[in-house]
Length: 321
Image 1 (cartoon, one colour):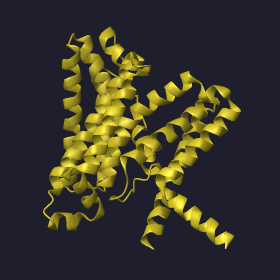
Image 2 (image 1 turned 180 degrees about the horizontal axis):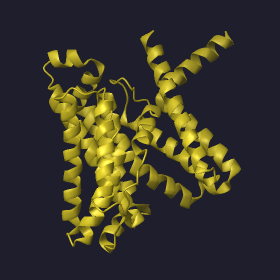
Image 3 (image 1 turned 90 degrees about the vertical axis):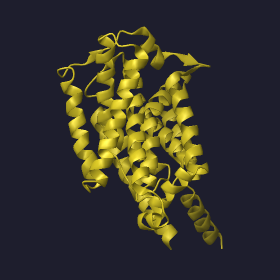
């Protein structure tokens, strides 16, 4: 009887993505803090929040796409491109908000191109965005002759470094984006349609849902968030580097899947993604605090992605029974 209760409780916890994430976060904090007491210091927690906010902007956008049954591999390149472009524009004496607006528009246009490759030319999302990932990264090097673009605008630098009530501005920006997407997905017709499309694309079309219009918007939003993340990173680093944000999209997808977003679509919440963001970033930061060599960090992150996909498979398998 006791064995049955334990199995039943395990299944209940396993099926509850938020509970699993909370338990994982607590276990991770205990493990890293026991090895290095600086892990839970205020300064390091702020570092986790800031790094998590930059990756989190893309993870929120990726989550919406994954729920709709799509994926985007270009955000890391868009982020790097945006950082260089904003640096070049500011060096050309563009007004700050004018430069930010131009970069955001460029990002949104890239997202629109991604959607057209998928909807009009009928490329698979993975292939289409893999191609644009390479193209956009190339332009990140081309626009400034392969060099980093230093940023001297104190006002722009302040966006990434200033604090409000003790928290850096990027953290507040992520907080606002999370609220917007939480309301969007949970309480609006647009959000419900995203779930319907991810659950059954053909049934959603028969129900009168404008599939193409929603997918176009999601790719444009995701690219816009990647551009914003790239500019925030450039603001914090005082430079836009063409090699910045390599692998950002994989971290974002890993965080989303860890948080319970189904890779095949139709399932997941923004709250789960937020938990996944900070579990993943806490894990990355813990490896850095322990001075784990960078190539071993890549091995660990790749392994974590495999684990996340395996849990996603098992969740779907259990729910189908």
